[in-house]
Image (cartoon, rainbow, N blue to C red):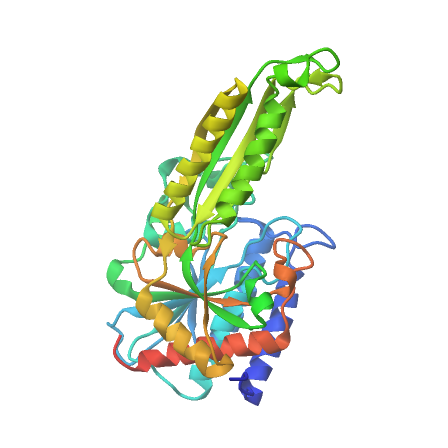
Length: 419
């Protein structure tokens, strides 16, 4: 089935979204680049502008105590748990303009449609522009969404940026009181579900020639510091069969990582992103190699099995070569499953527009990770050119944004019926 033609209204909404993404991209601390970090002047400027767009869509607006910009469009029953839509407004350094803001601005277009057509759902619709998903300034992520869930560790307030300014000091400088952080927390009964629209940040939709996809889960991840220790020796005098070459062992393992991970299903990925070779001289056999391992997948069981297999393989390689191998995990996060009913709602909307709904996991983190600890979450992906993200070349098309906005609206309108 070919993609259906879109209404003029959806196309106009997409053009507004693209123009507003351009407007927000100008709110940057770095001339000629997009860098907008938590508790910066540009963060507050973006909140002000987005708040104005929310108000124009018929919403009441407020900035909460951790710096999220929020809006509410009332439903027929003010006591019913609201439907929450959102994404983040902060960026990495030298960022693209669609990662985060696209989800906030398409949500505003959804509410704009409701407002202009006089539609009230049984429940209110709320939108949140999260203050800090990326963690660029203070090295801690999901500060905005964890404000809503009430899961801010107390030591976050003492974390400092590159200039030695703490989170607490930065908050006070902008008129936010660290003592009031708890006021951002929402009750479990406040929301029935959370929906987030986001660029894919990968190449799968482009490869399938589809504008939209439905997210099944956000990958869990494990990160480890690993090492092979052999014996350094003279590159000219030690025969090949007598060597304990740590780099050769590491190279063999890296190829095995690629082979073993590729052979498994479940959308698993594994990466060696950093490697140090000691002593690092052209005429010395490497006696020690330090390297990192990053493994990710949408199911924790399959992820754990892969990691065990990779580490066992490393031990076997080391033993065969007369080396020792070590590994220590320094980071881990569980996979976040998207709610099955929300997946169905999104898939029905997507299928109605493009004929099929591609189901795929997210390899990147999102605010939905935090929100899923308290409420059901669903995510809609939009195709981005060549899968490029966190880069100025990040790109989406007006047509794809129009399809995304229509699918988002259709999904929200499905809540006119029982939740």
